[in-house]
Each structure stands twice: as C-alpha cells, then as structure tokens.
Length: 224
Image (cartoon, rainbow, N blue to C red; front, side, top):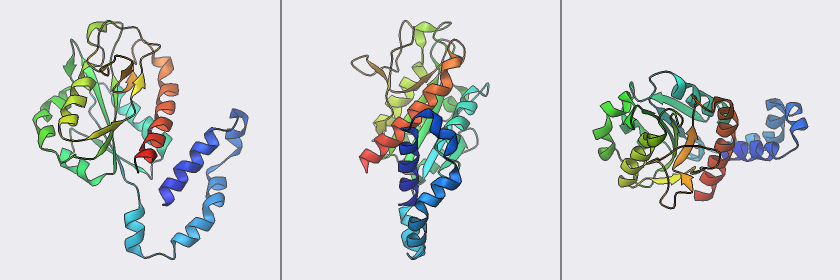
C-alpha cells in the first residue's frame, strides 16, 4: 500500500502550480504519510511483502542514450520503486518477478533492433509474461531515418504482445516528423510507447519523459 500512496501523493503534488514544487520536499511528503507508515509497521512481514509494488526497468543501449533515458525514468518514479537492468547482463526470465515492466529499446540504421536485444530476441517468446503490465519507451532518429522511425519498438511490442503481456503508456504522435513507423497503433494516432529522439528533438526529451512517467503510473493504477 505504501508505494501506491507515495505515487498518489507525488501525482497530487505535480498537479499544484509549479511555484509550489520546490517548496514540497521528500521530508514533507514523508510527514504527510507518516501515519500510514506507523500503521503499516503493525502488520506482519508477510503482509508487507505482498503489498510492495515492484517495477522492473529493462533496456539495451549501445551509445548510452537509452541508458540515460532509463536512468531519468527511474529517478522520476523513484529509485526505491524501480530496479534497473541492462538486458546485456540480465536474463529476461527476471521480468517475471515484477508487477510493472518498463522496457526500452533503440532503433538502428534501417529499422534494425539494438544489438543487445537482437542477441536475446528468441528468448522473448519463452519469457512468462502473460498478464504482465508493460510500458515501452524507444529511441530513434526521425530526421536521418524517417522511414524506419522507432521500428524496433514496434517489433518489440509485437513480440511481447504474443506472450500475453498487456500494455499501457501509449504515446500521441503529435509533434513528430517522420515518414513511416512500425511503432504506431493500428489507427496510426499513437506510438505503442514513449517516443524519444535524441538526435533531432533532444530538447524535448526531459519533458516527454516526465509526462510519460506520470501517465504510466496513473494507467497502471487503473489496472489494479
């Protein structure tokens, strides 16, 4: 219950006018939820464990941009709530341990899958993800490779969907300029995950990441 309450409190804080944000500190949030902390301490250890939400963030990164995006996502949601994993060093079977999965991939050249994901691509089909809630984020270059923008994220979405995973975190395609993408929904109005472009629109990434994190937390809460 505590992680959910913390998320709810953070979301409420973000709804306040921006001038109040710096005045609200982690200590203030802690003070606001202290009664719940005290009440939770009276429960058994088993009950505590089953009430903790676990978020796993998995990514592959060649030039560190996807890794940097992953770290920003973890910092926004909270380091205590998110375990971060590089798929180059982590078996996909570990995904089964988490309630919510945040998964990042970049697109290379003419719609190719990032090398670390490519090396374990066949393992996706056998990863037990039925009923798992997944939110994707992808990186690509819409100016230099506009015909294949975020294709790898679209391919990953299809592979994960075949395992029975359910998705949140779809992202509107307004504000992007590209020719084609396999990462669009069937009606073409959204990407199947957060769309980032560190080559042509790097100045928009931080704001997009922050808004997407808020969206994902709200949508995940609605699935409970």
